[in-house]
Length: 388
Ligand SMILES: Cc1cc2nc3c(=O)[nH]c(=O)nc-3n(C[C@H](O)[C@H](O)[C@H](O)COP(=O)(O)OP(=O)(O)OC[C@H]3O[C@@H](n4cnc5c(N)ncnc54)[C@H](O)[C@@H]3O)c2cc1C
Image (tube, rainbow, N blue to C red):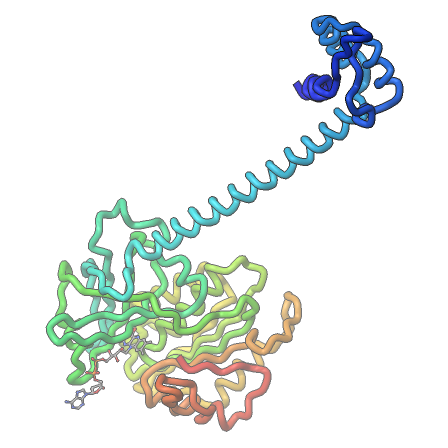
């Protein structure tokens, strides 16, 4: 078709001369060459013959400049069409992917509204803390395979839980998912506060009861270059520490093999039963989570359990040794970014203040405050300190 169309176009330029009984070209400049012009003016005035000759010529000879120009142009326009259609396809794919992604994130959470979950498991950890597992109150087939994947990939995060009678809400930190958890399950370590309104309410709930959640809320964006972490956690501060370990060990592409040291301070041994290798036969529920991570990533996650009852406390000497340990020779590229080496501190207010100085309200919200406490006195350089 492409070969024929230009020929027809050219024939429209011919005019029939009654006088000579011949066709003549109305504008010879439209001809591609003198030869083709001469051929055209000598054709007999029989349209069928003209068409027949012209068509034969078109099929026999190499395409003349006009068809060449046209085929080049049509090839170019085809390329343009492919690029255009391809780009449209990519945009459409990105849009659908994004929609599906955000749907899977929002299938469970619908901020700013609270959504219902059901307590599927309640374990007593110690006289002051429990571990609860909750599941979204929606049909299982509506729960995506990794509904919190985006939150886990980026670093520590929390949710708010509501007390429906008092209409108050407090933040809580999901523990990393366990091997037996269903997609959509979330686990929390809840410490019972003396006369605490929300913790008292959560403590009173039974398996099968509903609770209401809102989130997720990002607590810190872990950079892609984080290679060394020292985490000083007190009590339930272990939850964000395990989140950081989970993100770096299980959710990153494995380019960096991180070194993580967690100090976990508790008042009672029951809170970290089985930690430090003693009484291994009986592991507390949280120590089981830690144990699982350590088994999956040997050498990458080191734990130090500190128990008030046993007379072991966090101090400068222990932190200093951990910083030196992590500054050792590594089989990975040297990274100079300041936030590749992180010290996190998390736990009750008094604990955070003792280790790194208190947080302060800055510009209407809770900020980091100045560096104080143990870390402030150590004059740490090369490490970024963050209070969670
Ligand atoms: C980002 C983030 C994540 C968190 N994650 C967790 C988590 O995973 N697990 C967890 O257990 N906690 C977590 N918390 C803490 C949690 O949000 C609550 O602050 C905690 O459970 C206490 O809430 P409450 O309502 O029980 O205590 P509140 O009622 O708010 O009481 C707070 C304190 O005041 C004292 N108090 C209250 N009333 C009285 C009174 N009449 N007389 C004397 N003292 C009183 C209580 O003893 C308590 O120490 C997190 C906090 C944040 C900010």
